Image (cartoon, rainbow, N blue to C red):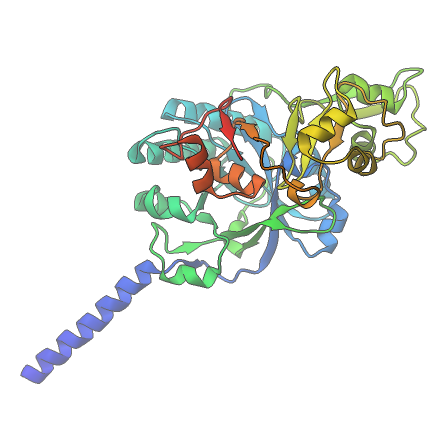
Length: 417
């Protein structure tokens, strides 16, 4: 009898331990069978024929942020990805700090993606919290996702890094919504890590991927079959928002006497961007009545990074190439060659110049007496800023005496070096 009792206890303990170990495992919901990328305006124009030929099958496209920012390349990314047979999904970058704002952002997201037909589940990208407490963070996330599901009748999932999946988002949220996790180390390590989820249906495994057809770095992902919608149909605009604000693109009708260079100057873009977006074969041949799509507000005047280590500078009135070169610690010849400038003495306000295609430190010796500052933009995170400039989060915290790494705000000046 005693032997039977002891045997029973051993079996119970064994089974109990297995169950405990299982709850600590974070594994794919099924086989990671689909190669993917996620993109936004940081990548600029993308050649999706080359992307498809590189073996990419799924592309997640940033649609919107906050309550009035539509990604400049959203429409173009969607049209070209679909045209080349890629399966697409949409994500929204959330900035809400209460549930009322979460509903407003959900309405805006749906208004932006209305008229489009996604193949993949819709995604909430929620990674900056503005000092909001854990309980309210979960309420905000749930409110947003419930509202989007209500308006679209399509499933929504959550994108999160490992830290927030472990300590911020709770198990009740995990029970109702699938996870797309960002984790850049060996994913086999996840089997021993406890989070609110037991499985994930997507993993972003690097933000420094390289794919033919994309200039610079791009996020790379692997997805399981659970990422796809069971039913695909066009999204209706049930949000109450009739016209999304800040669409960041216009249609221009070519007038008699127009040239691409004159149109580019007028709209603060480049001839090359007009050529790429409108698939123009001969830049010297445009005709009156021709319709051109032009992106506006795709860069903020001043400097902008488009992808890690890829800096775009918008020329200001009074700028010279030598002045810009000194600011970025590169040579005039480097800028001339990178931008195919015919006359180094002729640059104009609104012109966009690529300063680097790789880290600045690889192009010129770093002068340690130079101090570099960065102005925080909406949607920035300290981790993202650190990655862009090739420094650690701890260095940023130390340089700027920041007590709460999750609390930064647009317009704040951050010391980099």
